[in-house]
Image 1 (cartoon, rainbow, N blue to C red):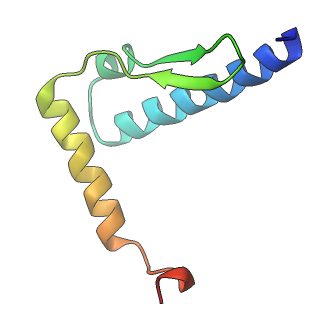
Image 2: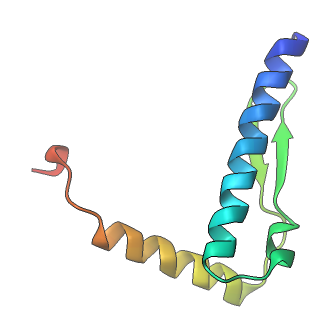
Length: 80
């Protein structure tokens, strides 16, 4: 893998991790929850976000927010 591929993957992973931390903060979760969120880049340059170990009640809160967002979104034209 060349250095530019790694940099591009790292930027995507960093941006995704930051977006998730911002969403967790918007849910009212403590900043410490975001401290376990880490950007990761594989040897091939593929970006990932490692969520680490989270408390069960915090994950339940995250899951509820996702369920609420899914059930309240407007149906897309593909759903018709």
